[in-house]
Image 1 (cartoon, rainbow, N blue to C red):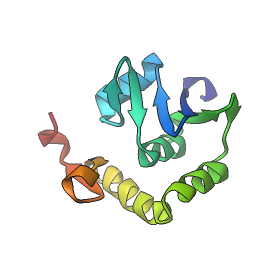
Image 2: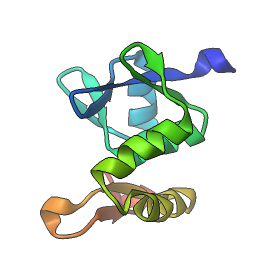
Image 3: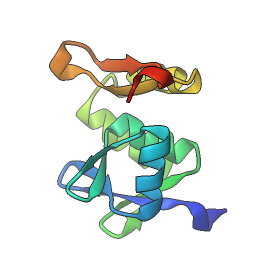
Image 4: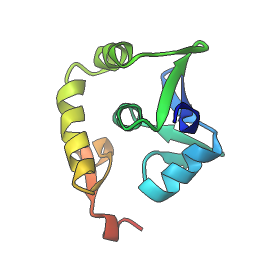
Length: 116
């Protein structure tokens, strides 16, 4: 199933993909945000897609392993792993989880039925 994965590129502090599969996943699973013809991901969304076997992260033409991804993301946010556990548990329960910093919280959480 390696072929069914899509690539998320890490460039200049941004995580994105322009693959059709990424756009399909974004539309059906509500992971990522469509902007200018590509899907932009949070660190939490990107790691979740790695763990669920849907994507790989590519930086400087190299595929990053999970350990390097976590190390890289933890440099940007010292509490990344704790926040990621919360993100992952909410996703497992069927909630749609988006960044909530501009609303004064870490995440915005929607039930699947009330997102659209």
